Image (tube, one colour):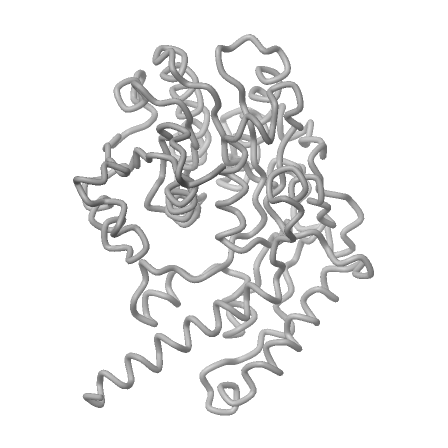
Length: 372
């Protein structure tokens, strides 16, 4: 789709988040007008601070607008903000922090926000397609615990099944892990049923991202970069906390591209929508174990950041391989259909870029302190 055309107005929920902000940029570059939906007024200023979005927020340009939905679980929460919208990308969600209440803070917000999006889109009467961000956590049993290992025996592709056990799990739930996995599984199963029934006046596309990795232009200090860095990069570059799960890896720009290109009804006809698109790099053909993926990336860190390791700026997390890596990723269909066959970037490329970004912020801060 040429940027010179106007494919219409897309509403993006969670537009200030990692996926949401980059999806906003990709949509604008592709030609869409964007309605950014956030939960607080201050998030609007966060978005406007992004260097890449500056040329689109000029009032005369009219490419970007902002709406606030403080509580997306309230009935009718999205009714007003979806009026006149043709496309929706629903990214907004809850990260399952340990102190959250499993049912009230995690499970129900996912389910109710999904229901509110569907209801508002139906009332709007203008929506043609909704893209929902999902999670590979829905593919594993919530009760199995940390016993999946790193053998990557299963394949995560566009038709991978949702865990039946997780899909059938309902509140009350014992942990935020149970809540997150079961909420996503239930939402994915429900939306898949609606998608197959063709009972709604719009089509539904679901995207399963891997761990999203990449720099953010909204972060300008090394302290903030380290605080918000994805858990894989933090483990590999700073020998930090061992991640619990990994379901593939994706550069944030590639993830955003999958979300926005999935709106294109010429690329993806309603009758040809797969169960889900996979926003994660295809696992290299000869790699059969997650520990090998981790080893290769660790070697890259040692090779590319040798000087910084010697200076103590980087500390390689060789033993920080995620506890559970049950899937090999095969996203070739997603790449072919949505990205013109272009390969999504994998763990090594993503972590290298994050390392360079972080170290650039460190050097910049040091130079400012010296008054250079």
